[in-house]
Image (cartoon, rainbow, N blue to C red):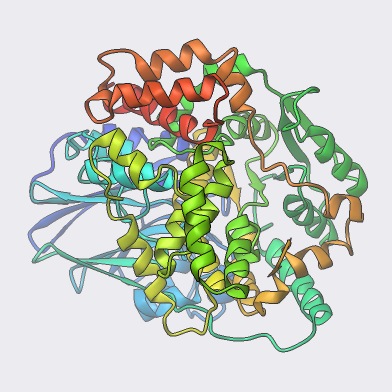
Length: 618
């Protein structure tokens, strides 16, 4: 795991050192850089190293191919690199996956290599012969990669801070992306909230032609079209093999590995599979102590006892979480509306004391249908749209202020004919009417356009609506929300976080299963849970999901209230140039007086305002 940064420009000043050093937390074990003249351009590629595989100088980057044609700067892990290396001839300097990658590219070219890779990665590959620069982001976007083209230059980096240090970023928020954030609670690639800064979409490759400085981009992954043939029990048995192999691949490391263990079955299965391979990995969990229903420590400790694994527990107080928020916001670099970023910050810091790599259970809900919105699609399929659903939508509008947020969103989706619109409504943060009040415009930015692009990618497959939604979620909101903060927060502590549930081969298998093997009415993760019962007691497998949440509702009305009001409502705060303060005040009063639980919306707005104060205006 590392940090990468690069600039293509005819004239690039003395800001390289500051740009590279801004990524030191991603790679405290070393730095490297190369400047190459290609097509009358100066191409600077740089790298900060967190040594995981091949701790020797042979793993130093940027790395040249043996033939001197290709230069690569790479972030991530390629779990099948040892098998791929066997297909290559010639001697190797070391055993790093970066060396395997650069020699594969030298042997076959970027486009031919990408479908072969199983891993999490973001990298740049410079072809000095054809005078092209390639940027690549893995199929699920586990590793972020930002880029921009401004003032006659092109730049890319693992984090926005490195781009800002180049002097090419104006540092202003993007008004169109703001509408996307207010719609989805995150900004989907290719946009970001930083004006002029793009995020490469998951599973995409960007090619920059250096003579013309023109960039083109396309998807390098085809959607799964294979269909599993067999019974539900057959599927569970095949899944058991696939998951064990995936976890085994992701144990590849020359440094200590652990597990981030929650109270759910996903991380428990990862730990169990690692134990099945003969590895008793140390586990780490976090919570808020007794008296908080959201606390998962006791559940995680029970799971560790069942599996016979050591576990370290971290208890954080409301004050500790609040005090860490500015650091969290600066590290994540973009406002995200999920409260789990706060306990995760403290959890990874504890894990880093003992290990350099952790396995997590992230990435299961989307392929396996773990969210309620997929249940709504199942209901819709059974009861086609008609006057009843239009009436229910109307009822939602009439009594919406008295409905739970998730139910109101579900009612809004039912009468919609367009699946992309339904997918947005199912997870929308603020309704069209609310966005109009907040910003003076009801548009969703480019959210619908991005959603339609991903839906179109699936046109060649025979996916039911719920399946389409699940596949898009796995590559859109998962990548640019949950995985984005997972990468930024873990790397802020120089910790590599791996997600075996998103192993490329494993997800190919899961997405080949019949939909009914994954999600049914009032049931989700069907084969996943069936298989889990071979390792865990039924009481753990079917334990109520807590969702790794923070009791924001209670704390925002109590010990956090004054701080939130200061950040959100102080006259002259920079975000108030874009958002109507009177509307913010009305929403806040509605929340703190318990007339309606606005926790989801208020936390997102709070993080947006804090981001504006700590990063944009800083």
